[in-house]
Length: 302
Image (cartoon, rainbow, N blue to C red; front, top):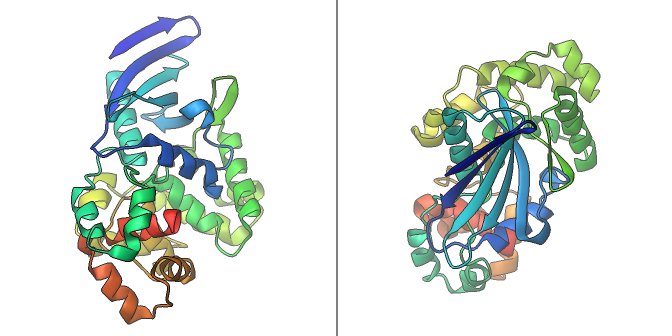
């Protein structure tokens, strides 16, 4: 780890190891095609640039694959000194966001027993699921994107982001970090309504963010699945679909997978036949606690 400071701020280099097999290219391709993150992260020249908010600090991160190693070189930058606990929090956030610590061994062993799925597994070999940068960001996105076109949801999200102002410049481009819970909690319901232009969503955001402050992200990542699900369902604006979305794409909980229209289409593309709930449960059941990974691979590579 190396650190440099100047009048314009601080920078620090950190190496982030990944579990093998690991290929950063599918991660970059997914980020580039993911509509919820349009314009928020850069993927030019095989380099991922993004901003993040940890311990009250706004950081820029520049990540590049290490040739011949399952690892990423990461350059963290900030306007002021970067405290050690902030570095630790940022490394954990980036590792989790990019799924670097995910052990795919068992998932791939099960995939090798599933002939129709083989081409998907081969196409995405070494891809570690990219989650939302934080579960809080996904919580807010799940509320904003309900029953509105994606461009409208993105505009609402960007209004929140730019008003708070967690801005950094990386490689000549501006990157915005999504606000942390304390920053969002500083808005009252009327201010949120003014920013996003939707009273119902403003009320949901106002209530959900305040309740999020009382939750333990560590428990949400690792605690008993049903207890975590119940905590999420208790948040304003979060129903069964949004809770499942949060569990898989925000918290990396792969134990359960819901069948929706998009999932049904992905299964039909790969397995060559439509599936009802029972047939879907049989296919997903083969993957046990990895069924969420199976479903994500189907959506991304199917």
